[in-house]
Image (cartoon, rainbow, N blue to C red; front, side, top):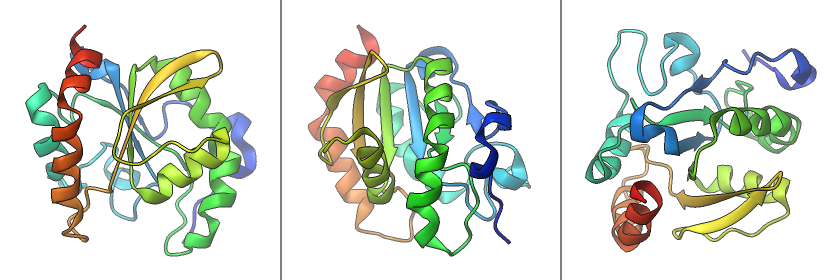
Amino acid sequence: MEEHYCHDINSFPLDKFLQRGKGIGKKVLILGEAPAANGWRKSGKAFYTVEGKPIPTGKNLNKLLDQFKLSVEICAFTELIKCFIGSNRKLLNVCGKKCWHIFIKQLELLHPVLIIILGVTTLDIFNKQLESSLPREEISKIQINGKIYSVLPIYHPSPINSTNRPKNEEIFKKNTINLNKILFT
């Protein structure tokens, strides 16, 4: 059953589907696509099940983030699309456009310096809303409402597509120097 929040964005609570960063994790916003069926819609905690166990996507992200002393537990996280669309993926663009305003408010609330975009679809919707063409796999700078952000689009870290893990490892390896500059200067 779908859950739409995009029909009344003005009453959407900004803390819903928003994990605030802690420590160095305040500098990083991980941006997902949309709430999953059994993710934090039910558990209340990003990348965890209702039983309190980390989901495989979170484990894969932690492997990438560990070298920077980061984890999904301390980084900020939100979904670009706030609606649960189930398997009706054709709604992603419509809901993404309507939910964009909520995302911008959350972005301004968090003040990250780096946005890690998870997945091809998330990047495509992000690019459409900004009328940009951020490339995959490399760090770019983008201005949103007068503030400059570093953005790193990666492939979705879900274990469903086993080819994404080595691609993401290569992306982080290729961008290590710049990531260290962004995070530790």
